[in-house]
Length: 214
Ligand code: SF4
Image (cartoon, rainbow, N blue to C red):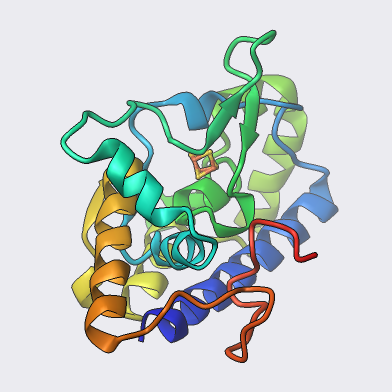
């Protein structure tokens, strides 16, 4: 159940990525190089379901128990556990779990909200707006003319529909730990060992492994 559900979440993520890639290709819209402002925020939210692919991968790659033990009864860091900051450049850094990141991490800066008339309003982040205001204006003109874009609410709904019982929203680290516990409990009761992503007979590419296969 966990693995197949995680695969279904990943397939929706692939659809999101394709739409965002299309937008990025057409307009050249992108994050400022190295920017990690959103990852260093303590307020990144995700649902348990959105974190399922990462939780499955962390169990598969043998990192889950250590993570659960390290933070058992301990306060978790305010910013995302998987943000690796650039020590020389404030608020810059990188995501160490990029292929498995949840919905908001994929959409932020590249999706739209609906305005009071129901029309899509491109929601570029303030850093993108400052860096390439003309491009942001061109994207909005395209949306006004009926161009394709992801809407935050509809994207979240698409994921939620896969398993409404896991559509429970927390700050990202808390959502991850709930997902890790659920996957761990499922494995315990189902008697499954975490599958090796490099040598598994259950679609080893979904979700794609974080570590490289040797
Ligand atoms: S999962 Fe990755 S992209 Fe999302 S907040 Fe954490 S470090 Fe940033």
